[in-house]
Amino acid sequence: MTIYSLYIYDRHCTCVYYQDWHRTKRPKPAVEGGILSAVSQAVSPITPANNDGLVTSGFASPRHTLSSNTGVVVAVGESKNQLPTAPQTQPFAGSSTAGLPFDEEAKLVYGVVISLRNMVKKLSLRDEQFVNYCTSAYKLHLFETVSGYKFIMLSDPKADSLRFVLRQIYVGPFLEYVVRNPLVKMDSREQGIDNEYFRASVDRLIRGLSVFA
Image 1: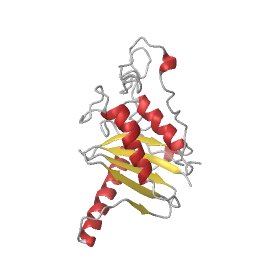
Image 2: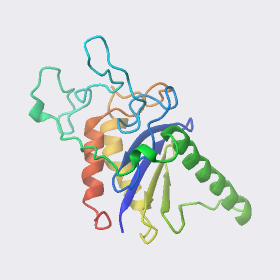
Image 3: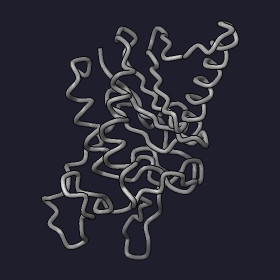
Image 4: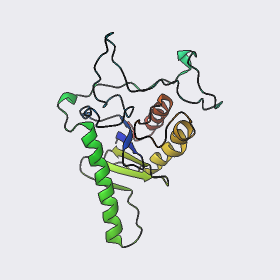
């Protein structure tokens, strides 16, 4: 059993965060303008180099966050060894021939979740809650917050419900490094969740699960 990927959508139905672990094929980079900036470097549109030969990035500095212990904004001049170690992106076999661009994949994932949620409510004739579904290839898990954020995880089909893991991500790293961080625009239609502390914390949490191996 293992965990494949994590998507976070805001109340505008837009993917604001993506992270993956054991996917055999990573989706193609999104088309230019297809996703918000700072959703994930792994699937962001390929950015051309500037006149100095450097590749410009839509990701802000990881210094733009709060220390979890002090609540103080980490300053520009602070040492790099005080920053969290961000998870390294590993190349995926066959990634160059993977299927859909990420922006299309993200829309499909969200569309499936909304369609199944509406179907469950209509068939049950009551306020029934959709939490997961399973196919022969993967299992999708859903956790939705009161504020409209949707945490979606894809895992091995044999995995038990991981809704509690999504809730842990929300009440832990998400509240700590995103909601309580005044430098993160929670209702932005221009930028995703650009926070290396959040990404590293989610990575540690997921890798610590017994189903991750």
